[in-house]
Image (cartoon, rainbow, N blue to C red):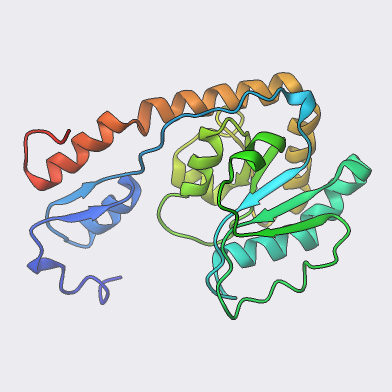
Length: 234
């Protein structure tokens, strides 16, 4: 970290994506560190719980050693079989998102419980039809925008504790979470919300409220204006 930011002293301002990462930079002695998070409007889909099914993962995979690919391998191989023990034929994972040239998803192709959709022009129908969004990331930095996006469409999220900490959300309130070393717990959390409409609704509503508080356009514009040293951005 010190080598990476050795030239930071020449910067007037350094922008971090979260307060946690801003604190790390300040501890390294970086000057004038500000935080600009994500902006995400809430557009919750209206399809009710009982008319949804399956699990959704959406995220780009740029390299074979990327966090998204690693997380999917762990999820499909260690978590999904445990989910299937409880949900049986209802177990279905859809994987959507850009896949770079050179990325091979053949280990998932032909899996009886996995559908590969690839890049789709509009994720809205997938957020509308699925019941749960899974975010099984085991290593990453920053703040997981894919969780913000899924939550903005009103899709409850089951994520690793790593992502929960990056979001600074509360397990059992805005999302459900489990440690990435505990596939049984991750599977149990999926089954719990998959079967419990009241819990599903509480998570959905709490995540939407959190986005409205922390990720609205007005707060985002104010953060950008502060970094640029202007009074207001319209």
